[in-house]
Length: 492
Image 1 (cartoon, rainbow, N blue to C red):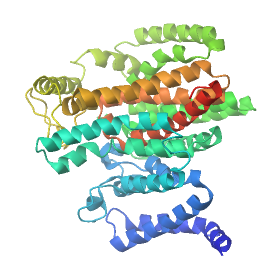
Image 2 (image 1 turned 90 degrees about the horizontal axis):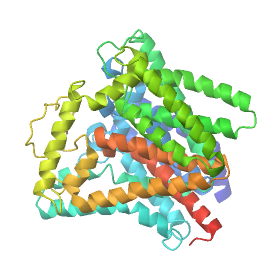
Image 3 (image 1 turned 90 degrees about the vertical axis):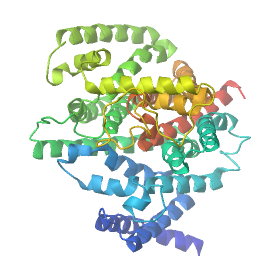
Image 4 (image 1 turned 120 degrees about the vertical axis):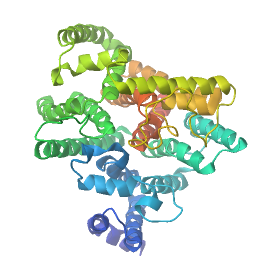
């Protein structure tokens, strides 16, 4: 009977998915509760099928829509166009009481599905891969961030702060350990990592083609006064997809076809990346490029150092020749100039004032921090950006300073330990790698962490759930790889 039931479900999987997403399309921005419940029922059937037969595919039902859809806060395409990905993204990422009309439900559909998925995987692996005895290091690293957030929450409650604001400030970051659990449970080998990275790359290519289409049809290849074309995270996803595509070329048997495929992906992706003109992404790539020479395996150290030195000379020459130049060719020089010249961009002046306000909070609350559940006290006057970003004083741009100001040195230190480990351990793995398969995952993790840190310090990086999802998955998968490496070396 169970075999028949599984066969029926497996044969009806495409129809189930089609009906589910078809209902979601019909619902549009104003959802009908009955249709929404039907969609959840169909999605539940898919989860049941996957959990029973192909467990590692279960996260795809959250991972794929999370990357494919556009979040409303990202203002994709500047409201010049409103594609279906943005309409559905509002349903997927906004609080359920807003997007779905469910009273009192502050969590988004993305967050709800994340919690459900993690719970299901935990039930399946709690006595094996996710047991404390089997994954001590994983739990030690994973719990660093939530422990710090819990400390900030307790401080806020003790000081009588608003519980609703506490939830708003903490809920995004608390999805990180859930996705680390998912990554650790699912990424048991390179094949599974490759599956998710290949899907990410395909989605990025689709997003790039969508952006090219809208840029040509709606913008006539001219952004005009708009600062960007697509969401900030799209720029970061493009970089991740291109890095993975390089590894595909290195690991491919037919390297000529692989390189031609890489060029087909790189050219349109690089064009959209440049047009999008996101300084945080440029700076993150620059920071990561400084680390690359230290990641090279021992046998390639000299070649990497020579290549890196050549790239530094070429890049420096290019920046010098294009300094002060307008247009796409001058974007690297303008990015560097804007990082050091506060007069270049009023957003820099805003961030300087924001950091001064953080400094006042840290000075007045040196031991415990301000505690979550309250807004950033404004001592140094800042520009009013509430019309663009309503929660500018609740979730400020520099979320690294936010952790220190609101969580005190304890929360800041725990987060710092988390980052230090996820850079130091993968660096050692990269240096000791004997194959590209072993090298790729830690290399990608370090690239993500360094680029994410720039967003954390400048652009509300701790609140972007898709950053946390991808980093959590890759970090969890790497910790699984690190465990295998430690076992191979005889380290307990």
